[in-house]
Length: 298
Image (cartoon, rainbow, N blue to C red):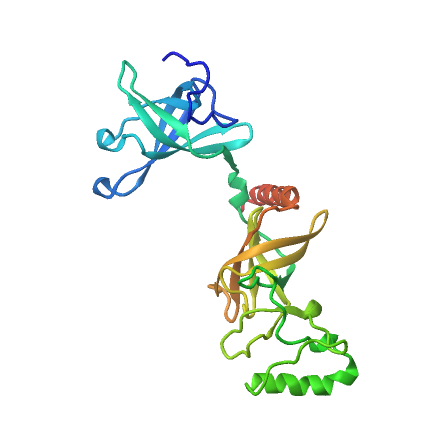
């Protein structure tokens, strides 16, 4: 197929990092329900790149004549020095010639999927888990509904306890902040949604957990009670790793009772980009995997 010089009007140029001519790639296609409702990973090769579109040899599979029509979304993947590269694309044309080809137009930038990011290794050590204040509807951080006892001056504690008791009983709301009563929760926690049986605006305490496993992209923690760690909640995790401390923003994926230990809960966290300690985490995972293989523990 002849290479066309320049990009056609209205067509995207090829994203940087396209696979080279004649390189092996895989095209991922989702079959409709009538053909099994499943995904196929089809090997093929790059024939050309025309006007920012990738031209690959048409892969063959059962039902390809019905599925391979313009507008079909696909994903193209290939190996590179940086790892496994993937780009989303759309089938814009099927060329029926001596060698049938698919002309694929990119629908995303090329991204690198490093599988080691999802490789978890068992790890020991303790983690501090701190709540991240939830934004309100206006986008501003929600102010705590009650002040922290730890931050109040000693002479204000009796009056503050009375106010908190009245608020918990539904007989009133905490007063506006005054110079004698600090308005923020301080290091003990931040205010958030109340849990079952908990008064509105309760302070969420800092939690201490133990590692179950760790990866470049997240961690599984074990603790006695998940408390306010609900799925979707953002937290800060602080722990020590070879080379220094780690302070990372994360999001709770799920929390459930531990399967192998009674009266304990496991909480899975996904680290939120960016991950400043990514290099140290990757080295830790690789080193642990190598040590495990040496011991025969895979």
